[in-house]
Length: 280
Ligand code: G4P
Image 1 (cartoon, rainbow, N blue to C red):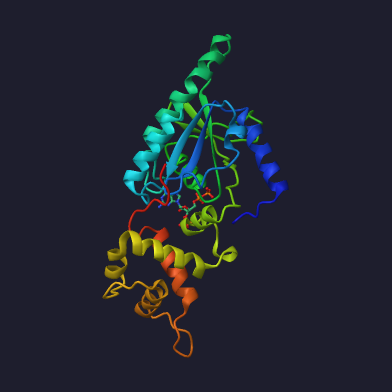
Image 2 (tube, rainbow, N blue to C red; image 1 turned 90 degrees about the horizontal axis):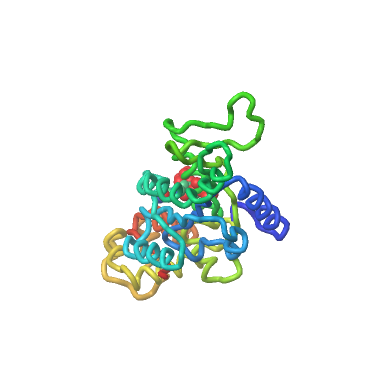
């Protein structure tokens, strides 16, 4: 991973989230719309406990829209309001803010019912590495958003970003770890970009990906890389893509590593279509 997770890191991350939880009324649990189960922290329910939560499926621009609808339905049937967004282009953000505010409202009303001064509802983002936390926060902190924490006299370290008139967002996200133990989960995290190349074998990942694509959407591969007749042998398909792109080693052999990295990148960036790797 970008961040190497060890028990010490996990405990520290958990503690940090638990500390920040005390300051907010609602948590935005950010998941990757292509892999909502695999991009979920395995201990999330124990960490967030009863804190109101909005499940946000990010990178919906890359996911299969039917799968996203099914996941949204799945989460809401299980008691978690959910919304799909695309932090890259801004789709779904307004709806996300409205739902987060709605989720936070009871806690704010309870607070004010105790006779305290009115305050805005507060939220924070949590999620595993690479799910898009920074991109979402940066989008929300755009030109129109005002930072409310850096006024003179406000000494607390954290910064709050105003989201409309009723909600503010902690500008530091909670970083949690994914499940790494299961090879299938690790594959999905690698192929979607949550795990960096340095710690997995791109050729292995690519073989599995191309097998899957041949099964699901072989036409996409044949037309994008001018493969001619569809090939059954996965490695032959990869070699043909390498030839098409001119990825040769000295001596004329195909550079399998470079070709694998290229195909994975094409998939991650949505150039082969919108795919979800798991369904509820
Ligand atoms: P993190 O803080 O949770 O670790 O994730 P971060 O925001 O850094 O986003 C990780 C990668 O995901 C970035 O790409 C970012 O551009 C991309 N990303 C985030 N949200 C979306 C989205 O809704 N749609 C799409 N298509 N991509 C999204 P990167 O290649 O690592 O970096 P870069 O392209 O931004 O340079």
